[in-house]
Image: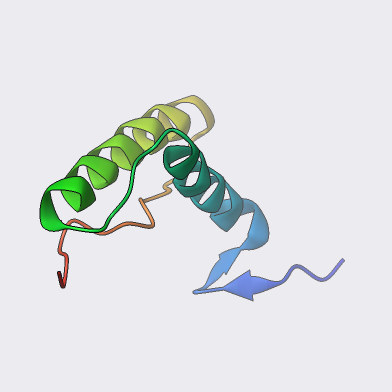
Length: 69
C-alpha cells in the first residue's frame, strides 16, 4: 500500500489538521486580522491538543501563531 506524504506526514496525520481548520471556519473563526488570527490559532490548538491526547498524534494547528498581517 502506497501512502501519500505531505510535509513528511501521511494523509492520516494531516487530515485532522485540515478538518479542524475547516470546522473553525464553519464556527465563524477567521484569520483576517491579528486579533481574529490569534483567536483562531488558540481554538485550533485547543482542539488538536485534545485530539492528540486521545490518539497519540502530534498534530499542530494549520494557522500559525505568527501572523504576517
